[in-house]
Length: 162
Image (cartoon, rainbow, N blue to C red):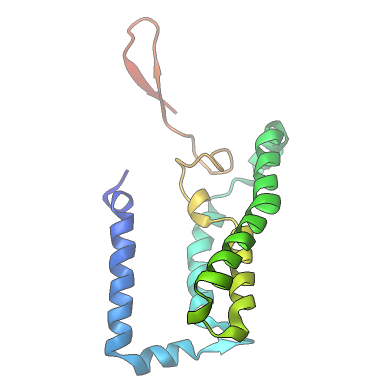
């Protein structure tokens, strides 16, 4: 694991703190950035989301899609969890936290929108789960072979196979 990956939580925390500090130091700049939208979609956020997703899409090996039917149980469980469990569990958590616990701190006319946003968040697969080769979610769809240790019966020393 690279140093960047090892300390990813620290980098994310530092970026959040830096973003908040810059927003307080230069509020006009960030208000201008925030007002750049088309059809109520913030353009900087849309561009950054695409920049985050495109590298993952470029690594897909479409030839490996023919092997998907061999893993129907895993795909079935994933689809069930993503579409039958997560949206309803997030609706419950949204109702509990947004609709009840934090409701006094939020605009009353926007509470249902916040809950709907949480439900959509739960239904959307997380790109962090499918971004790396070492993840279990998509190793067969990513180009390249996974490296794993195996033992040779004659020497009992671990060897790396590709």
